[in-house]
Image (tube, rainbow, N blue to C red):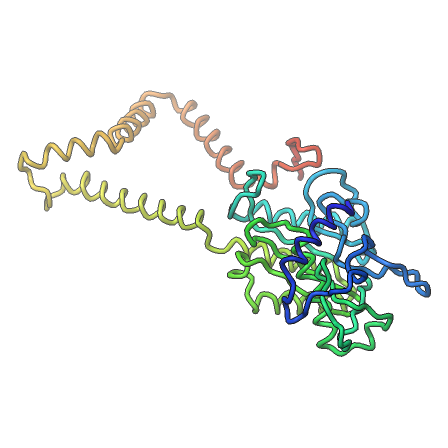
Length: 357
């Protein structure tokens, strides 16, 4: 795991020298040494760096997850959420975002990727000395040198800079998106700051207004002791936002327009040919396209079914007609109340019948 992060850090270091207005560190002792957190000797709290930060896709236990496989999107190593039920519920909401948004690109392994939203929650972060003349950014994108002062001694802009640095490079390190289709929400309790890191493809939908909504909602629910509820509200907001108008929606709209135009044309062509004011006339010239469209449109099948139903209803006894009507009504009721009659989801993946009074 540490060797993987060292490779990532090397690549990050090559890419970020001079980014965000910071120069690259020349002192190699300031580079990432393989420790993603230190322990405060007074409070015994973990003080986190984004370098080597647990990844919820495989560091399940470190992120507070009980899973042993699968891709997950919530990491709460310090237990800011109060129960396992809250953790599992929020992680499920984040996985639903991935499942319910359109495919945008393919990963290096050839897997289709949609939008992803992930969340990281920590008590404390490493505090960089932002006033130092030697302030630089190391090979892992971490601001150096760090200091022992607490976040309470920082200005609001300094807290924002540290949260942005952590969140932006955490998104790069987690690498959930192959084409900028990922969003990472980072919160540090000591900074009391929320940062939303957005990939370039998600950026067109997750606008500054959406980011402001996320931050405001997060702070409001957190201050009222309802952090889990606030994260679920945010997840639902992002799910509806990231669905947007995708290529799949455009294709569906175009198909609907085509169906409507085709239906209008067929009604116009096949019906108006027999009314008093026949726009097509009775000339033999129009008979060929008339019968051609009549055959390829399948209208003759619909006519045949209607005539068959009428014939059978006249010949069938009343009890058979009544019985068929009851079956048809039952099918309609089952269709309308399907969610109440059938519980289609269970943890085992099986389908179970759940009839309630």
